[in-house]
Amino acid sequence: MRFNHFMKFMALFFAVSALSVAQAFGQQLDYLSKAPFYKNYKKHTVQTAQIASLPIDIDKMVLEEFFYKDRVAALQPLVAVMNGYLDSMQITRLDGQVLPKKGSPYLFVGSSEAETAPPGSDMMREEHHKYAPMVIYANKPSTDWKKQAEEILVQHSADYMLAIWVGIVEYPKANKGVFKKKVVLGTNYESDIRFLSAEDKPVEVIQVTGMLFNKKGEVLRAGAEGIIHEDTPFWAQVFDLKKDIDDKAIQALISEYRREDLPSKPLAWKAAMDMLIHQLTPRTKVVG
Image (cartoon, rainbow, N blue to C red):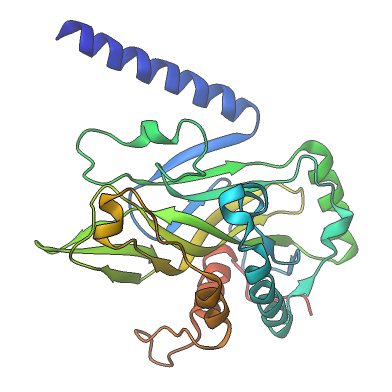
């Protein structure tokens, strides 16, 4: 018994040490106890703010991981309509090519046991957690990136800058009452999970993630909103198989899939974008 306690203590010690080292290099991993899935990194209180945005892009893990790469082509039209919607909001779209790729920021929001979760995330799950918790991981930008971002913001007389990505990740399930399950996708947004569904298997989610930066290129706030999910049928989970969100479902997102729970029944991706920008920005005025 004492040996088990000692091993748990050592595992926790090394995990905390690793997180401390990561924070020293601009990486921060945090536990999210509930929705909304956002984290403040610096205090920011303004009454009038001018905001610009980098072009919406595909999350780098989707571009890099082999099990997501086959859906990059399907995501590109969705990203295009999202950028068009961003333009219609009169938020200035900056030239993302000017900023260096090396040292650029990265954001993960999802299950602590997702396939693309950053190292150390699994340590966030404690014994009392029936399901793996949600975590948020921010890899903050380099000094060079921040310097160039500052120059761009000055050129456009903007106070803040947004960076938004569309990605595929996994979210944990949650209880809904005594017998049912659900997946919490974001701010005031959840969806039922089929009754026969393995508790320990996460669900795949298409999400929008975003970061808000100040004039110095420092991260102020970050978070995510889920758009749609796909749960693997129980019979497939028995054989350790997984059902992904396919190209057809991604294409349907552009003009068909709507938030039936909202009064105006907006397209799901528009609702997610609206909420993400609302959650991230303290603005009453935009650059346009």
